[in-house]
Image (tube, rainbow, N blue to C red; front, top):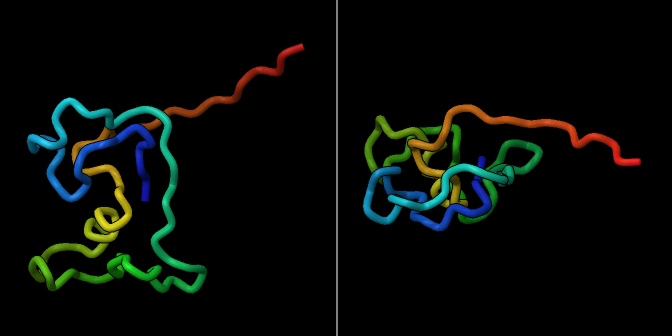
Length: 89
């Protein structure tokens, strides 16, 4: 899951909830693993590949898994940029 390093809101809340207003959702980010090499979720992480019955049968486990590891909430920017630093002489 993608986690913006400077994000200090509540990942389980919506992007526009009070806790997530005026907090950074852009900038340097890290990928946070939620499964091992065989696809099994790490301890404490909801299975990202199935529906989550804690909420309702329509909720996808991927969103709950992202919340479990502090992933960026819905409403994050959809694009990203990358580049290569030029070689200094």
